[in-house]
Image 1: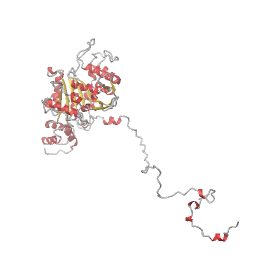
Image 2: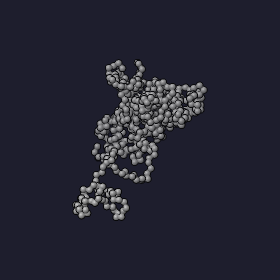
Image 3: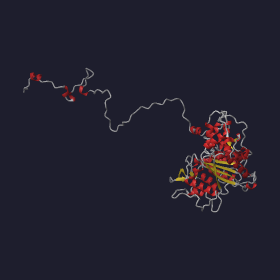
Image 4: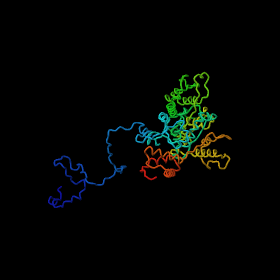
Length: 502
């Protein structure tokens, strides 16, 4: 059937605008004039310019930047422990400082001479290695600004020197073999750690056995290995690595003394020990094998505190010398440690066998059978500040002042406080008994001692000032009454040119 539309009618229709056509019907121009693919299936042209893009589902909207590659400069990373060794490095000499002419050394004669009070005495050169072995020097002390290490002779130092003479039997024979126990306290910078160093130096000069704990925090900070002691009641924990380190320090510092003493007691737990061994050989068994270090330490302590030989070992027995036990940072032992039990409960510091041994020396009356000195110092710069210890020290000071426990002035724990009863009982004497522990509080230097100390700075070339009474009184007041740590800061900072007028 023929259409009613003729070609002439169709040609007269107006063409539809391009914009009205559907998108699929819009023709696309291919880049190639003779492309065989249909124009409908060609790829759409990419848009140019900063047009907005639709974010995908869960796509991050943060700014992404390419990380710059760090150029390799050829340097090696620091070895394990290198940074710690640099941080704890001890420098004891400054070649740029002036050498103080006529400087006396610390000796058995000068340490008790009251005429030298306020004078800085040099530490003997052969003794420096022994003091290094027991870690008597600290990194933040001012040893590196002088030509050689020295220490000021203050009133407390002279009194301690005379105490060493009495215990050694050089003064009063009745006080020979006496045991003195002291807890040294004081504000920051008062010289507590240096006071322990002076005691160690005197102990080496008197040929005593010196055993030290340079930092009590290291035994409770959870940095060393520990294990439970089977059969102990209450359960205690041993620290083999820390015990081995103590034996190493003891042998390095007391090598001459330990090599001259023979084993005088029987030790069935140490089968590898020969009967003719010296105490040095006994101690070396501990730091060569940490697994038996605790048993070796107990055997060494038994030998140093022996008063008579065992049966069959009388031949080479020699009387044991007095002992010096020095502990720095006592407050860290009065709280719970960072160690955990098998039930994941905190272990109290008193349950560590190492800590328990040294704390029991304060409680026992005959802890050092051959006499000696216990010096336990607190730290003001690194102090956990336990409440129980503060109360115990206040009670100790009250007993020394003559205040009885029944007096209303006797310090008591605050109401509803959680003061540790184990710490309170540590320094509490038995009923109607005299406390074996003394409390020694270090204060500042006197004006005469401060003048001698500051003159040492001037003679070393660090201080350019005229040292007179007016200047010393001013610095003594600014230092909080002669606190030696603050006086040292004045000696370091002052660089004024000396004036002609006094």
